[in-house]
Length: 390
Image (tube, rainbow, N blue to C red; front, top):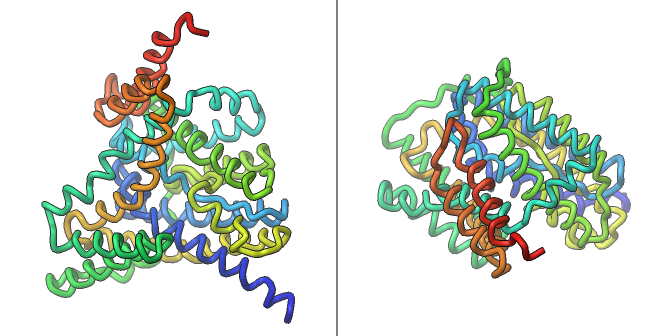
C-alpha cells in the first residue's frame, strides 16, 4: 500500500500531462488535417490514431528506459498542415507525405548524420519559419472577435483570467469555455449531433505521392517536427538529468508515425512543450520513480483517444470562429518562443526576417508551400550576407 501511495504523484502527473497536451492543442491538429483535405471522419480517425500511437510510444519508451519520456503529436507539424492547405493529389497525397515523414524520422535513427545535418540549419531560420507558419493561426482569435464576438469573448476572457491564476490550465479551460459556448449554440439553434458519430473509428486511406506533397508538405513537416519538437525535447529532458536514447526514441516515434499515417495521423515525436510536466521534480521527488509519469501519460493518452470522435463532433457544430480562437491561443506561447529565438542574434536577424515574411505570406510556387520557400529564402539570404566572413 505504501508503494502504491508513493506512486500516486507520478501517476497524477502523467494524467495531467496527457490532459493538458490533448485539450490544449487538439483543435490545432483538426485544423491542420482539415486544411490538407481530410473530411470529418478522416480527421477524427487521425486524432484517434495519434492518441493511440503516442500513448503506446510513451509507455514503451518510459517502461523500457525507466525515464519519464513522453511522446506527443507534432503541434508545429499540425500548424504546417494548416498553413500549407490542400496539396496536389488531395488527402491521399497528404497521407503519402505523412508516410514519407515517418521514413525520414526512421532514417535519423539509422543514419545519425541526418540528424546532425538538420542541427546545422540555423535555429534562427528554423524558428522564423515556424513563427511565420503560426502567425495566421495566432491571428484567428483577433479576427474572430469581429466575426463572432459573443462566441469568442468568453473563450478569450477565460484564457486571460486562467493565464493569471493557473497558467498550466489556461488553454484547457478556454476549451471548456468554448464547449459551453457550443452547448448554448446547439441548444438555441436546435442543431443535432448524430450519436453514431461519437464512436471513435479508424478510416484508412491508400497513400499516393506527388511532387507538391513531398516538397511542400513532407519536408517542412519533418523539419519542424525535428527542429521544434525532437531536438528541444531531448534538451528539456537533459535539463532534468535524463539522457534520452536518440536512436530508440527516433525508431519508436518513426514507427508510430508510419503506423498512424494511413489512418490520418500526421506525426508523433518526443514531447517538448509538455515534457517538463512529467520530468520535473513536481512529478516525484525521486528522479528514479518519475518514469511512472511517462507510463501514466501514455495510458491516459490512449483513454483520451476514446473522446476523439466527440471532439470532432463539437468542432462540426461549433459556431463560427470559436474553434479557430481556441487553436490560436493554444499557439501563442509557441509563437512567442519562435519569434524570440528567430531574432535573438542580431547577426542572424535579417535572414530570419526574410524567412518569417515568406512563411507568413502563404504564397505557394509551383505547387510547393510557402514553408519550404521560406527556408530556401532564409538560407540564401544568410549565405549571401555571411559569404566571406567565415
